[in-house]
Length: 441
Image (cartoon, rainbow, N blue to C red):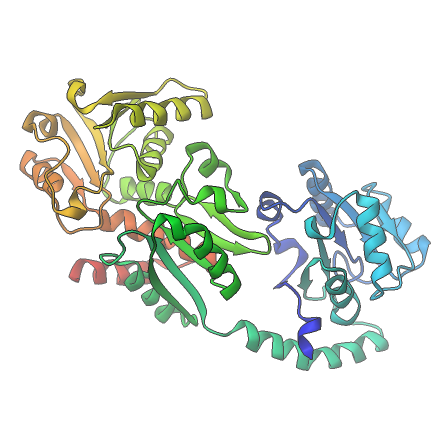
């Protein structure tokens, strides 16, 4: 009975809504209630509200105010920003919402509604078929009729919170996944924070990928990590990807939105944090990437973003390395990325920084490059395979250079993913507890 009044999501304030991500997943119009949603009841535009609204319009959003107030109030509020408006809208009747969508030239599927009341704002928008965002009222001092509505809202909001507090589901998709330490990381973070969630492993065949994402969405799985070999292959089945992930052509973190799963790449953060923690200097040095898959794209970009003078991508299949470098050079309008076949790779510069991204270590196989002189010319190396040691790392240790196993990158990309999914900030103490758990496994 109560679910007809449930919002799609609830935020502390209109000003805490991540409109950038909503735009990225396909929303193009925002319909706002005014009083107690954007400003206090009866108040004019504020500096904060004008900045938000003009920013939305500059980004490309259509903006319309839908209010049950009379025209003088609504026009006065609208004039400083020049959006569109409907006064005496008759909320929660659907007619006003549909007229607003028509005025914006949109559809109910690409239009959001933001308001502070369940029985007018949210209920009407729900009936119209829109994505609804309920925000807490700005001013607690309200007219008596609104106060009475707030009393009636309480049991519905309590029911909504119980509904939302059901154990949230997250997981990892890939093949293979049995070796993964991701459940240890995420479930420990949840335990430390008191979050009611569960993280599981899902080993999928490529033919199952599209159907599995559809199933996960129906089940309400809120977030997924993506590992080998699907960091590139999953992209066509997503509703959107971040700008950087789009440019490098690989994702490893998916977040459920009203439109489907939205992809980002936290591997980049994991690598950059590893540089910092391990005191690895990249700027001005040559970067070397072994492999040319999804993880290689994040590694190559991280080296570039940290100021590497050149980024060499070495792979057994030269065409894959060539394609990766071509796409990155075009995406970032540079010529930093250079592809080489394994058999014809050049002598690297002294002091280079190498990131190993192949799955050879996972299989217990010999490193891609076995020439000792290669390792002796490195200043530092990172293994992305989450194993305590691999043949690649053994060679790095023998050469006496700085090195990091895959647990460091795994940990820090997981920190970023957990924070994205749960809209939180993990503490240094919580991260350190999980780091020690990984080391002791």
